[in-house]
Length: 204
Image 1 (cartoon, rainbow, N blue to C red):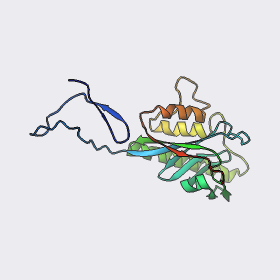
Image 2: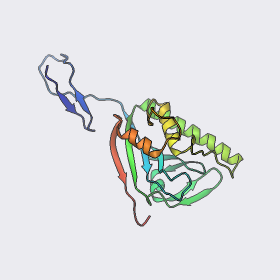
Image 3: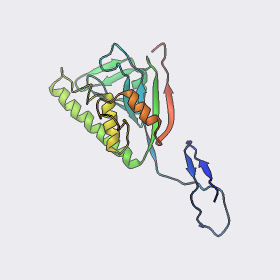
Image 4: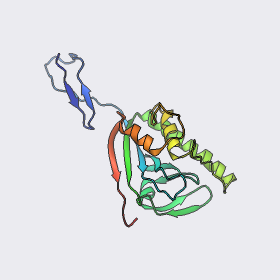
């Protein structure tokens, strides 16, 4: 049998390895296979030299329009529009207004995951936010942030790992993880469905 390939709607290539007779008529056309999949988006932002912890950039996870972001002060959960364009953000002990994240370039890497993996990722993110907020309520002037093992990138890599998704280079030490490392690994992942671009806006 000569090798045949088929490209799916999201650009993934499949190789024909076998033929099965399932109907009494001859039909050699490629059959659509419906797979129950979901997506999460990893948002990677450019660096900012004068911000503590952001010299290497920033990484956050968007699930169904809600962005989960390990900031230096605390773990933040905010809608996607506010994350990029600014607005009111509820923190553990106060409410603040932000200017958004479009003062720098951002790329969103949309990953295919199973519904179960998506639930695992969402549950772990919510757990981490709850733990961090409990700490902030008791210690409002302190932060659990660590550039080595509790930064934006390490949190993304660790959360994805709970769902069996590799987001860092296993040839190196697991910490510290950088945004560039996550970008490099996920750009090569077969889970990558598409790339979204959120370019810098001069008026942001």
